[in-house]
Amino acid sequence: MKQNRRQFLRTSAMAAAAFAVPLVSARATSIIKQKTSGNMKLSWTPYDLQLNHTFTISGFSRKTTPVVLTKIEYDGLEGYGEASLPPYLGETQASVIEFLKKIDLSGFSDLTHLDEILEYVDGIAINNTAAKAAIDIALHDLAGKIIGSPWYKMYGLDKTNVPDTTFTIGIDTDDVVREKTREAFGRFNILKVKVGGADDKRMIEAIRSVTDLPLAVDANQGWKDRHVALDMIYWLKEKGIVMVEQPMPKLDLDNIARLTEESPLPIFADESLQRLADIERLKGVFSGINIKLMKCTGMREAWKMRNFAETLGMKVMMGCMTETSCAISAASQLYAGMHFADLDGALLIGNDCFEGAKLQNGKIIASDLPGIGVKLAKKIEFGR
Ligand code: MG
Image: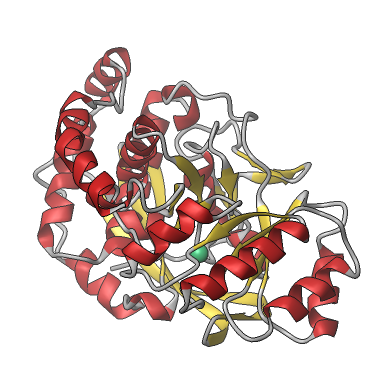
């Protein structure tokens, strides 16, 4: 496998050089140019998402997720964005706000320069990927509103040609697991189970006692031994599991590569990757990648990642954090044609403040509104 990865590295530079994706068509670009004038104004507000259930993944529980909502006003239009901040990723509302305060958009009067603006934002500080996504999403929303089109149309995608979204069931007691599974009846066509501990088989059996729906599993790096992981994957396949996310520790790539080679189920990278630059080294290690806006700085890079991974012959799925319908709607614009989707983030919270992409027959479908396709569902005060 090491040799395969070396061989791959020799050819991947050529693949990367040949790879280019127009983010906005020439016609759309000229429309933005004609309509753009004045300065953009950025404002924000912290907001705490209330989870419907205490959420437990391998080694961690919580009842709320902090986010920061952003707004960019321009020429009477408003673009909305969001940074979702699950605590294990290291960003906080304070760090996002500190980052946002450094952003000065006054020098940019032309939204055709999304590239230029986002390159500037990316260069302000390393990391801060959710803070950067909050700007990226708001700018995409605004640009789409100026053009008068949702992004899925500008990407050339059929918004209905999307995979069923999984509905996530955290690690819990059998009774709670069965209760959560029943919540999914009639709404979802595939469930995602958080595994990676001693309770894996008990969890799966509890779910199987109430449903035959296909299941995805996410071990969140929880399996430490490749042979134990492989035995578990064979057992899971017999139980109707269709894919496995991040089976082993994120840096244990040699063992993951061997596991993927031997696995009867596709293996997706989540914690092992963040951004576009991480994809090359995962070719031959994972079957596919899980793209999340909060990890990769937003829609622009997510779109590039999707296309690059597919060019390399890798499968792609769209994931999310616990997020409002703002960030979920942004994701809904660019995931048509992907293999899997995990976009239940807004469905797990009780205080969603946006209306946008909606669950329809088990799929998250983008709205027809321009931009990322959202409107505020209640009054939110933005400031700075
Ligand atoms: Mg995951």
